Length: 326
Image (cartoon, rainbow, N blue to C red):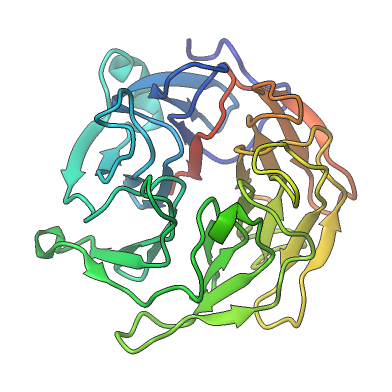
């Protein structure tokens, strides 16, 4: 299917969108969508189905963490896979087979909708839901010494899942929003400044609007370079209904979040978000306020004050996870 869904304008980053669901009542998907720098999309199989997972990336690798699989026994996943995706010139010859996948040590407990980030030399997984309770804990795995297994990191100030997790250019770990105890939508933000064993999370400036199932990115270019930017999600009063939430940004060290742009054209939750090389922000997929699964793409060009339509994905993608490839 490479090239069949090329976007109307060239976009700059190479993006991988993994797993998710494409229809109401449908099971998790064992596939990824790979968008090349010329705007064309390819589909590749994964070794297992996942939805509600999260991912992060390092040069040459994508780490896919937790989520839910297919069937009762595998509904909540503790597994972590490291994927080596093909280079752009090699995609066509790999279309029939999954990317090379290395199974890393399982986490001690399943985690659905956790946050994950590569921070320093370790893969950090923060919060999530294990099917019975919402997690306050975080765990870390040294990616160069995976045989040592997972280590316990400092606990969050409070339980949360369906939150975002970002690493700033200055090396700050930022957990924002999510659902807390009694499934309350959170506006709170937790910050971790060092990976030292004695480190502890601190409270950061709260979000302007409580939200969960949002998407976040830290652009490296454009007027929002270095900021943590959040879009979409569900707001107060509903665990599932997408709300018309503004796009907000936080510059590390600032006293408060600011409104960076109006709400998305289509309110959505469980969507993905990435930044192009020039700082253009892009959101895709998710589910709208009527529970319709979305394949639409929107973008916010650098310096623009409103989102605009930017084509469609090859298929709807709800509760998928996405990264730009290094």
